[in-house]
Image 1 (cartoon, helix red, strand yellow):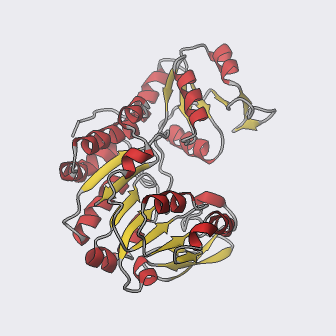
Image 2 (cartoon, one colour):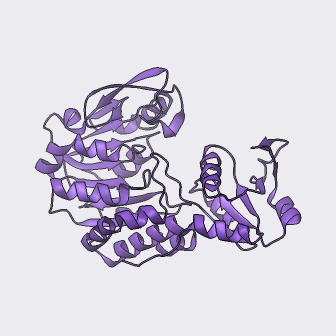
Image 3 (cartoon, one colour):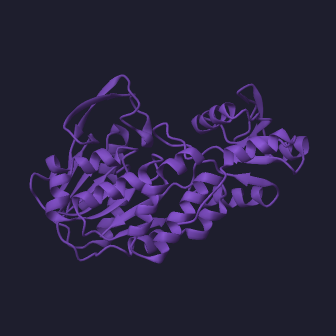
Amino acid sequence: MKTYKKDLWNYLKEQTSLGRKVVLYGTGDGADKIIARLDSYGVPVSGVFASPGFVRNRTFHDMKVMSFEDCLEAFGSDLIVLMCFGSARPEVIFYVDEISSKCEFYAPDVPVYGNQLFEMGFYEEHREDMERVYGLLADELSRKTYDDIVAARLTGDIKFLKDCEVTQEEADSLLDTARRGFFLDLGAYNGDTVLRYSAMFKDFDGIIAVEPDRRNMRKLQENTAKIASRLPMEYVQAFISEEEGEVEVVKNIGRGTSMDKGGDTKVATVTIDGLLKGRPAGFIKFDVEGAELAAINGGENAIRTHKPMLNVACYHRSEDIFTLPLRMLELNPDYKIFMRHTPSIPAWDTCFYFV
């Protein structure tokens, strides 16, 4: 595993002390988090811009929202641009490439959930755990991906993401599509992954789709109605966790619905073992907004007994890239561990495959 000596935040502190300007690309929650981190390092923000069509007449943190061209005119091409949101959309990635061809560009890594920032102190504190996981990875691409994801998170440099990205089809080729048992889609959203994996796997015994948001649940049921007509299909509006019960969340907050929110409506929590009731799991997909470790803990019996193939998102919390594989190997030391990153900026859409 490669060694790193500096992170983006300290680099920005050095550069702004020399008079260089930092501007933000994007507004909203991600920009709020990045501004808070910059403030803690004493890094000033000089401006903010939005994508074409989203500029309008508005302000953000008392700064006028400009176009990228206006930023270049105001601050010159020696500015440093920080991307403040995540996207896998090809048109956004194309626009990012255009911006980064004209000035210095970074995509800072701030955790989607939790408060652990992936900076030098965090890297040094947990380097031993990361090196342990690196040594357990099953192929060279996984090791390269792990190195590149760590580098991207520390430096914000998107070249590391592009260097290791693969298509979704390439990533999913790690899975044995002849496997029987139940498919659990944890974080089923609008049914996109139910559709993808039900097309790949022809012999599922049934599908259990778990989604906490009621609007997404309606779309999920509509989009997978044909599948439900030919396969046993269970729809569960709940959070996946390590114990059964209920939790309060903010109502109707969309794809990012998380147990971290706290709010005004109650949603049930369920476990993998409780959903399966002893039935065999063949494949489980985890994309549960930072609750991946809790979900694994709630599926201890199924993972130990049936050894299902697993696709586990590892980008919601900074610690996921070492806590998730180390916990999984406690439950089943026979797993081979692969890591794959599909196109997205910043280091989202990064998953472990356990097979």
